[in-house]
Image (cartoon, one colour):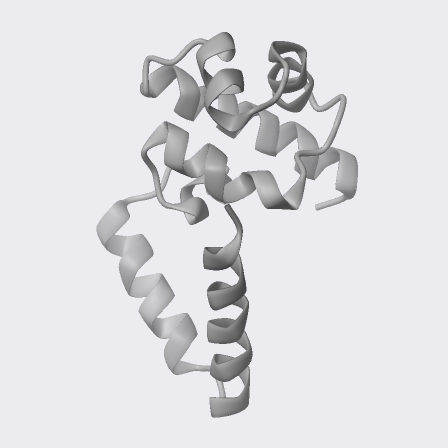
Length: 109
């Protein structure tokens, strides 16, 4: 997926989750600490979301961060199996890198 395509898909997913949470752009903007126009720009793929805002957005929407990046509807039970299989296929070094990355994400507020 190319950059612009990624931003479009992310924007669509963000809007979908925002509507599912029954939150307006204004409410999301306030919770995330950005202008309403910024949320609109994200949803319409005019601007990429800042990395540090990802956990704040997920929290505001009441979803785990990874759900912001699920661009297709997936069966949650199958997704869990896929994640388990993915983790089982990784080496110890790769898992350590992944867990270190997750720890850093958790520090972002």
